[in-house]
Length: 299
Image (tube, rainbow, N blue to C red; front, side):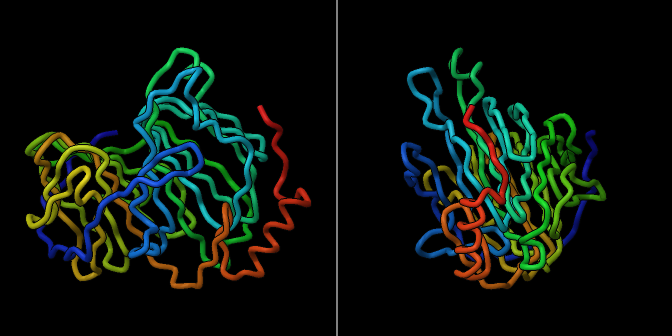
């Protein structure tokens, strides 16, 4: 469903910092990681952001086939930009996630899942690209029942700018009285933005939220003062001193906007677990080994 956004006059949040999205290696996979870094531990409540691809997948080149592995204490989220992925988990879910779709997993007390390009994509060959986000859960929700949501591209509400050049897909949260498809455990906004060159839009949101903007492609002027550009400043974090931000596309662009109320709790991470203490991490490892997070056979 598509709607035009209303004209907005607001005080803009100032830019806290802008930075590159450096390449890192996760086993055989080379991907971009704007945070965490040596300088940015997290953007509370967001723990980690990975931008993988675009990569050409084939029968002789498929490093993205991630076999069964556990998670506990947070929400791993995948925004698929190109390609097809197969998701399977210990709750019994199995779904093919296509370009534009989002899979939002609430790991809670524990889930085992596997994901990777579909067999059809591997056989035919094709491109895969996406974002994986780790969204923290507060201590009182870290041990809730696990859950999985798969929302398809055509199911999201879309807001269009006044100049008709910017489309904002509302994945979670709210924009201009339109709401996201995903039900969230905490107060967060997640918008995927596609902007044609010259397009402008203002995005209002609560100043109780910490927020960030990540550029997947193109070149975009933010708040009329600083550029987001590939291989330069590709990631931007904002102060909580205004009512929103503005963007103006210098080229055809794609961006991910995220905002959320900070949890402000101690964070302890180890591998696929995000808890509040080292003791809880040890408990998570023990529970996984004992099968308390469920089972998922290799495909």
